[in-house]
Length: 110
Image 1: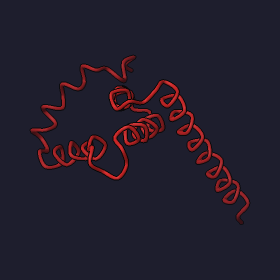
Image 2 (image 1 turned 180 degrees about the vertical axis):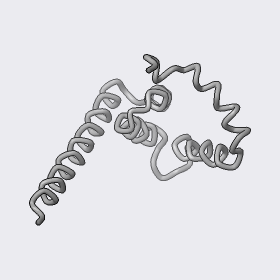
Image 3 (image 1 turned 45 degrees about the vertical axis):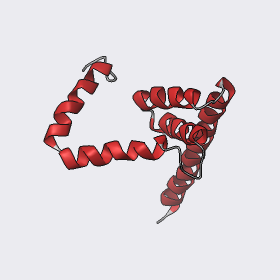
Image 4 (image 1 turned 60 degrees about the vertical axis):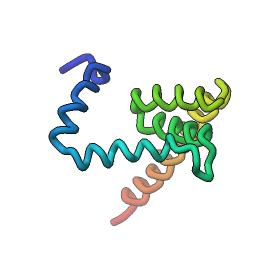
């Protein structure tokens, strides 16, 4: 088993992925434009902080890096970066607790 699950060199494979599934790859790229747009009702800084919080819950190191840097460029502070990560942690913990309640429900069923 490899020790390097997250190797930035793997991103080179995106070129091949784009060739193998062009429409899907373009659709995936366009999703990122939702975060990057500056003309939405939610200001760019908050879009980046939301994206960072989601990246913390999905645990994607590339997204964490991109959105931490994006938030910084949009004017976010170090405090906002940390708060957004703790907001993500709180929601992740809430999901675990409610799924625990669901597990208890299933356990108690006949």
